[in-house]
Image (cartoon, rainbow, N blue to C red; front, side, top):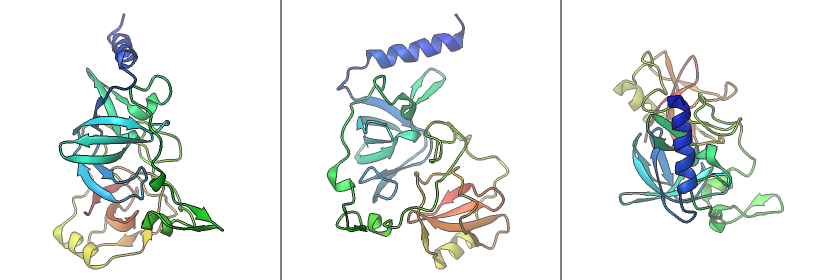
Length: 234
């Protein structure tokens, strides 16, 4: 039996052995937002570093969002950027949706869903109110896991961006902070390595090889040629 096949069998055994109601340990594939609600537009309550270990208390049925804790930080994180490590293999949680997922399935909190009446969003997340007309596209990155058409994780341990990506200067960061632009709402979590749709307007900065915009209430710098997010300015 090949090492790859043995690893696959080991992962399957790990999943099968996990109790239905047991907590699952996982890691983050990239720097990851922790949100108050299971939505890419929810309030950010904290940020996890790449590779951070988290305890998963449960996930939505499609594993798109998981309720997690890490130290004193608690909230919701995108299941597309959480993985279970087994040896050298990294198994994305979002790929485990269904009966084989080693997590407890929980329902989406009622308060996370914007109530719609007469075509208008009523009480709920203030950001959700801004989304009454819908999003204008989806973030996309090199596949790590996740559905087609939504943002998907870009890799493990620093493989998201190439070595040739320009490092933003202090002048550029100061310029962006001093010149806020209108928010663009895109489906998917905002992470380094995600690519902005070509149809979305970006803006010039002092560095010619970088541009900027605001995605889901987060100012970001992107590579001017590829539209790939290289820095989130928090």
